[in-house]
Length: 325
Ligand code: ACO
Image (tube, rainbow, N blue to C red; front, side, top):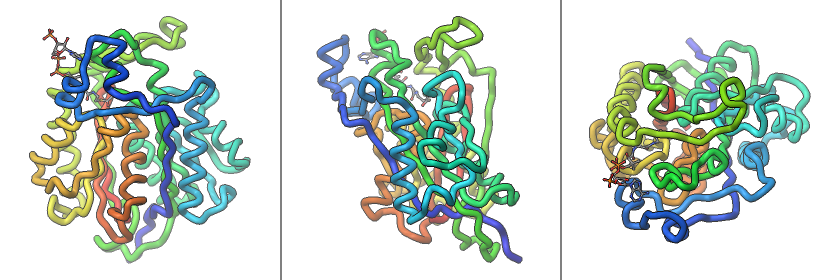
């Protein structure tokens, strides 16, 4: 019996030119390269230039993904863009991307699940494609977190960076076997009891300001590993995949200690873990497709590989996706 699957045709990414190192931060605020590296694994992050918006990052990543897929933009009939840092309160940043790509058919919308945004967007697009509603989707994670940071708060401003990544998905009939290509399973969770642990203290309906990111870092850390491992076990249970059978683990790049602890708890071998947090910092919804693009470009992720994604972020929201490349 065949099964409709969302097969990944290509991926791409974009990072703003400006790199901000830990040493540069240490010259501005009371922190050090040693503290940041030891607690987070982050060495540098990219920062969008003045006048460079989330949509610009997203468009560059989308174009790179389309080129990698060998596809014209007109083939796309769905754009799901995950971001917490849209160009404007409305319209959706996704329609700016759609317009810039010259697409005037299908649907484009933003999705807000903070750092879990890419996994939520992937799951959303996958459901639309498998239902037959759309044929080909661009799933984008794009952020300019530098615009919502309190640059005097050393507990948060050292952690985040800007960037964008994208994948192109196509609905295809597959044999309906575990060896199928495409998105094999997705698992999404939210629990609003934790909404005050990681939030932005502004918004159109409350303060009429954009606000700044606030975080109880220790509280986030405390919950992260348990939540991440729970949804990965769900993905394994749903598919029969195991820590041994996956080829690559591409987690949300928030903190090396969280990633290492999650991989360790799940018995995922360290050499299967794709790490870019050192170079990109935490780029929220963009971090997974940014890391994916690195691992595809350097030849690690190859056709037929089983790739495990996971993310956890504000809300809390968290989720996993298992994809055969
Ligand atoms: N440089 C130097 N010292 C610092 C810095 C800094 N940048 N930031 C905090 N400190 C100090 C604190 O003031 C504190 O000092 P004190 O003991 O004199 O009061 C000390 O370091 C310890 O602070 P903690 O906050 O307890 O440090 P902790 O070991 O918990 O590390 C961190 C902080 C890195 C934020 C950690 O809690 C963490 O990684 N949490 C998870 C955060 C995360 O990953 N968030 C994103 C996930 S969700 C998403 O992606 C949106």
